[in-house]
Image (cartoon, rainbow, N blue to C red; front, side, top):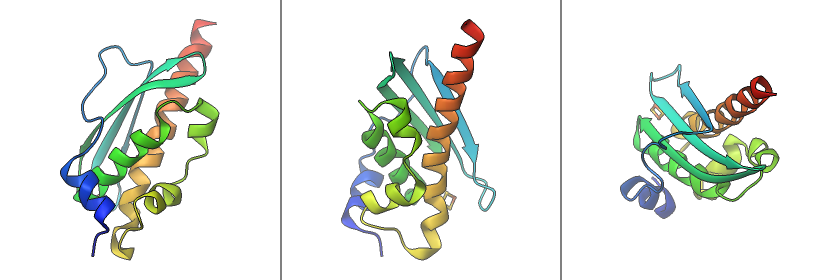
Length: 125
Ligand code: FES
């Protein structure tokens, strides 16, 4: 029922953990199941230099989190901001319909981390 890519990212997730002094942090909870995801960003100029995640959730949530970190590393903030939940699910070769809501966490947490970074920058100015 899961694609090979989902199984790969679930059993061997990339970029798991925290960053010591992250430039931006985003956290979202999934209202449907109570699962939580947190994304940490290191930003240099306008580019995401490093990204880590912690997901307290189901296998599909772990796989989508892992995939989103791979998709955004090296991207500009604007490029990362337009990555959608559907794009993450697509990059994983799709998710079973009952698990599509799990992919919402990854993109939402990413966007929240970018917004957090931008807010911090504004305060500095
Ligand atoms: Fe909670 Fe998948 S069941 S994110």
